[in-house]
Structure formats: structure tokens, C-alpha cells
Image 1 (tube, helix red, strand yellow):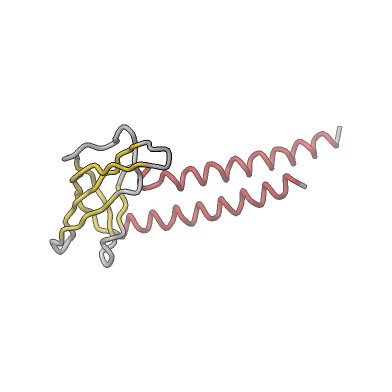
Image 2: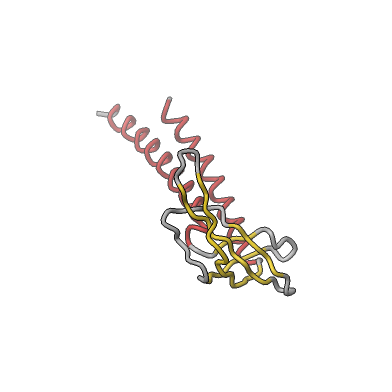
Length: 137
């Protein structure tokens, strides 16, 4: 019975992951491309007093509006340096919605979700198959 719950949970996560992937691809296809530059590295201190660095990007929209984007992810050591440039995608009507065009920035969490979903589906299907196979012996 446990394999059935795991299988269903895996299928649900797989469907959610595929919907998120489709939405992200659509966002990237329909968004506006800009070149963003790291303006500064903001120090972030977490609950155990560990310091990491979060990049603050600046970019110019299609209508010459200057925008500032604070990346969601911080790292130690910093993955970025001041003055570094990268492509970003933003919504034409909502330039506050930004995706940094790196593998992890565009697809990282979605790939992790899909990987976890596939693991659940494969293990539960393998368990079901093995139980079925062993019962025929």
C-alpha cells in the first residue's frame, strides 16, 4: 500500500513540475531580454551568524527605465563579482518579475522537483513490479 501513496505523490509532483517547466519556458520565450550588471554584493547574515553574499543587479528595460533586481539566492563565497554582466528575462508589463538566465536561475528548482518526482515514481513502480514478479515465483 505504501508504494501506491509514493507513486501517487510522485505523479502529483511530476505533473506540478511539468506545469512549472512549461510556465518557465513560456515566460522565457515571451519575456524581454536585458543585460544586467552586478551593482553590489549585499551581505546576508542568517540565524547562525553565517555571512553570505547576494548580488544586486541593475538593468535597463525596453523603454529605457532603470531597474534594480535583488537576486533571491545568496552564496559564500559569492558566485558573482561586481561589474559582472548576465542576461535576464523580465515581463514587459511587469519588469519587477525577473529571471536570471543561468541554468539554476531559470530551471534549477524545477529540475530538482522533477528529479525527486521521478525518483518516487521509479522506486514505487519498481517496488510494485518486484512484488508482482516475486508473487509469481
